[in-house]
Image 1: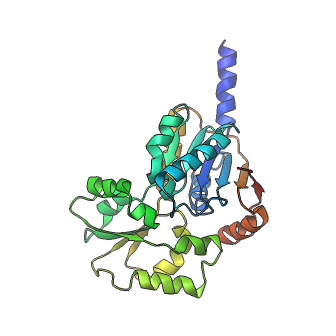
Image 2 (image 1 turned 90 degrees about the horizontal axis):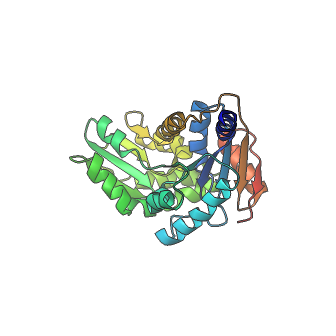
Length: 272
């Protein structure tokens, strides 16, 4: 009996962390997880066939994410990361109700961190329009940024630029410049509330200047994943493998992902 329990525990520890995004933005989360937990195997699933999520309803997004979670659970993932702000705010509580047997970690804008570190108590949250308008984000602001001035800025075109690999294109500078054209001079912190936006960090930094803090969720999500695995006794210590899947065109996605990450990343097709 002891032997059976021990073997089951070892099997779970060796299983992969599943990571879901509408596209390639979640690679910013994957990178943070891989750096903090280098021995963990990961299975990344990008839903290019249904991207972008930002123009879809909560109901459509949650039903689609349910399908993606099942895909990863069927491949024995031990924990699921919803590496997409839009998918998280659309239904993180619902995903946990549907799949109570597996831990699910979401990603939300680091509003609590911004509120704690902003010296002027004034900051902006850049996200998809869906996330910016969501009740979930409004509750985060009410809960963690009471007394702060918070600007929720929906940015409808940046995700598509990242997905096409145009992170250094002149059009990025133009769009980012327009976003901050009339910004409140008291803003001293920018929160990147979409996992695609860290790939535009350089362009954003060039516009807002070195004196403005630019925060993203990668580190916070990775630390939470580590805490959950530690509490469950499922931290891997022997080294792992990285698998990448897309519901879109693997060749195109691999090319763009390689450019974004400055390393070879080979995506396979997930027929979903």
